[in-house]
Length: 209
Image (cartoon, rainbow, N blue to C red; front, side):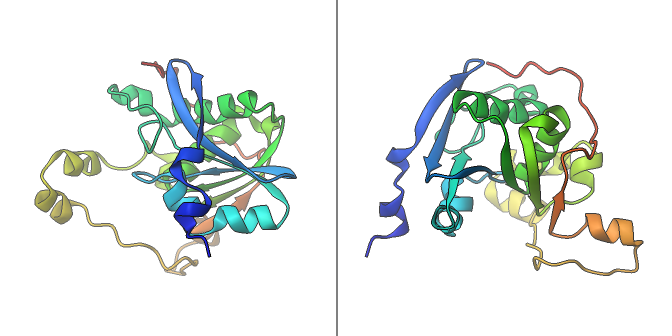
């Protein structure tokens, strides 16, 4: 029996150039396309291949596309902080769709990938049929993203980083903490949305090298 790594090894990833950035991606199966966008400090394999999301969706008759976001996995590592704005990362997803000649897709994003998917939904609503946002808190949509302390932690040594930022994974379900139904809905670990929902638009950023 093949291991998960043997079933979809890193070497099977394809690549394309977009705005001076090389994006690595998987393209598996046939059928209606679904794009998977991984979370912060992860990869397409870690979030989607090893937990068998890709295999399950392919078995269900879907064409599965999963990319390594810029700065992650086998994709280009850029040095400008502005190049990692969610607007730029959403443009990478759109460029991947153009490269594969996919007009309209379903999308699943997890954590940072959910934020990228939200920006994609805002910027390119006609390219999206439906989306699932997993592990997405309200401040990842309405605010500016994760706090600066996270970046500070990664720049410090491991001991300092562990003490300053040690996130605990959610239980994967909605929790009622006495908030309004609207806030409760938006703080669930996953939510299905329609592309007509509007999210904050960002000013132009220098997304390339």
